[in-house]
Length: 214
Image (cartoon, rainbow, N blue to C red; front, top):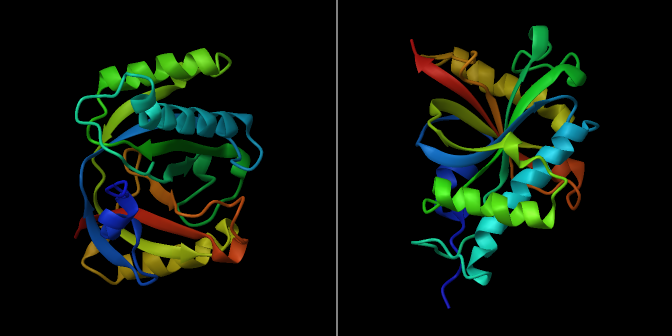
C-alpha cells in the first residue's frame, strides 16, 4: 500500500527551510482560511478558528469513509497549520509585538489539489451536522498566491521569534531585495510542531516575509 502523500516531505523547499535565510518564489495554493483578531494564547476566536480549520480539513480527508469521496481524491497527510499576522495601530511591525490583544490574523490550512468549492461545501455540511455550534460561515476556500519571499526556520519558543526574524530582516537588507510587508502581504508563519507535545525549545516554525527586488 502506497504511503500517504505528505506535503512537508514532498515540498521541502516550502516547509523545511534551513536556519540560514533563503529566498523562495511560493507557488499558488488553495487554503481554507479563517480571519480574526486577538491574543492567540487567550482568544476564544482563535481557538474557534482552529477548531473550524481542523474540522473542515479532516472532514475532507475522511470523506472517503462516507461515500462522498471527491473526484481525483488521493491519500494524504493534512498539511500544517499556518498563519498570517499583522496588528492594529502598529502593535506588530513584523518583528516585535507590543500588544497581543490587538493582533489580527488569518489562520489557514493548505488543501489538496482536488478540493473544489463543491468539496468544501460538502465538508461544511458534514461538519455542521457534527458540531452545529461552530460558525462555519467564518471559513473560506481561498486561492493564495504569495509570490517572492524570504524565509527561515525558527527553532524555539514563539516568544523568542524576534531574534530569528532579526536574522531574516538583516538578510533581506543586505540582499538585492526589500521587505514588502504591506496591507496585502503579511508576516507568515508555518507551525511544524504540536505545542501540546513538543518542548518550547524544540518547536519548529517557518517564518516567511514577502519581498520585492530593488
